[in-house]
Length: 67
Image 1: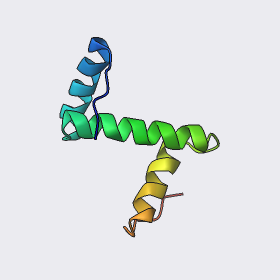
Image 2 (image 1 turned 90 degrees about the vertical axis):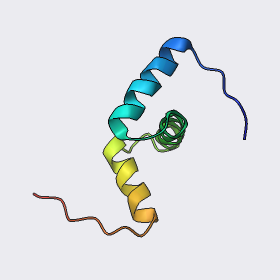
Image 3 (image 1 turned 135 degrees about the horizontal axis):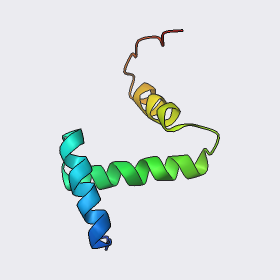
Image 4 (image 1 turned 120 degrees about the horizontal axis):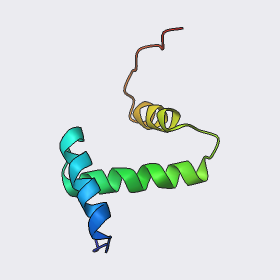
């Protein structure tokens, strides 16, 4: 575990997003970092595709998408 220095404006945005997503500030920042890392290594995937794959990796059964 370490400390990450981020800009005050970005920290304020993380704080706002964490409230909406019902996450701690640290959990929200970690989520954004993980999704960003996955997006960089999988540029062909959309945000929704990345999140869906993360859910599936946990074994969570997701409902089928409506056509």
